[in-house]
Amino acid sequence: MGRGLGGIGWRIAATALVVAAVSTTILALGVVIVGGQAFADLMSSHGESVDASRAMYEDSVVRVLLLATVVAVGVAVLLAVVMGRRLAQPLRHIGAAARGIAEGDYRGRVPREGPEEIVSLADSFNQMAIALEEQERMRREFITNAAHELRTPLTNLMGYLEALRDGVIPADQAAYESLLEEAERLVRLARSLDTLTEVERPPADQPVEVDLTILIRAAVELAQPGMRTAGLGTEVRVPQHLPARGDPDTLAQVLGNLLQNATRYTPSGGRVTITGERRPGDVLVSVTN
Image (cartoon, rainbow, N blue to C red; front, side):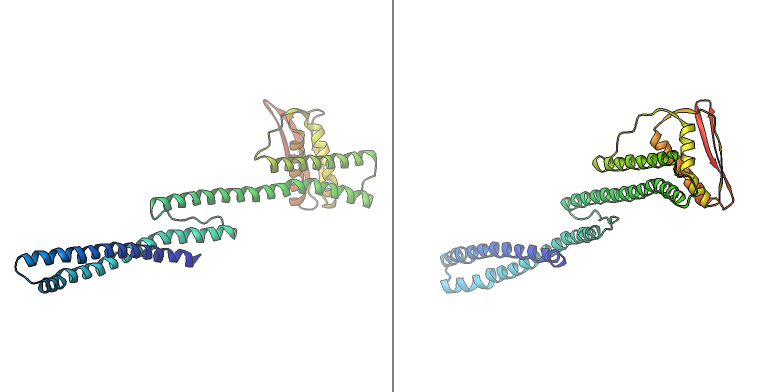
C-alpha cells in the first residue's frame, strides 16, 4: 500500500508532463512552421533575404520558445509532485488507521487534512471507527455481564449438588425442586441472551405481583450450601408476606448476586443477615454482614 500511495505523486506528475509536452508541441509546431513562414514573408517584404530572416527568427523566437518549454515542463512536474504528496499524505494516514482497526485497535483516528473529498473520506472513516469502538465496548460489557449473571446460578447449583453429594442436606423433594427452579432460571437467562443476539435491546419484561418473602427465602436456600462451606451463618428477617411488583427472574438474579458477594467477602465465622420491610411507596431488602 505504501508504494501505491507513494506513486500517486509520480502518476500525477507523469500525466501533467504528458499534457505539458502535447501542449508545448502543438504550440511549437505552430510557432516554428506558421510563425516562421509569416516572419520570413514579412522580413522579405522589407528587403531582407529569406535565409537572413530565418536565421533571425531562430535566434530569437525559437530560443525563447525552447526556454519557455523547459520552464513550463519543470513547473508542471513540480506542481504535480506537490499535489500528489498533498493527496498521498492523508491517504497514508487513513491506510495506517485502517490497518490498526484490522488488527483490533479501534482507537485510531485520522486528521482532517487535504482536499474537501479527502476530508470527507476522513470524516466517514472516523465515524466508522467510533461506531466500531462503541460496538466493541458493548460486546466486552455484554460478555462480562453475561458471565457474571451465569456465574451466580451455576455457583448455587454446584453448592447444592456438592452438599447433596456430601450428605450435608437431605435429598428430598424440596431440594430437587430448588435445583429445578435454578436450572429453569438458567434456561430463561440463556433465552434472554439469545434475544440480545437478535435485537439491539430486548423489550423490558412487564412487572407482575410477586411475594418478595418467597423470593428471598428461595434465594437464601440456594445460597445456603455455599455459605455453610464458607463457615457463615445466616439470619432471615422478613414478614410472612411482602408483596411487590417486578420481574421475578430479575429479582431472583439480584438476590443471588448479593448473597454470592456476601459469601465471597464475609470472613469465615461471620453472619449474613437478610431483611425485608415495607416502606411508604416501596419495599427495602437488605443483605448485611
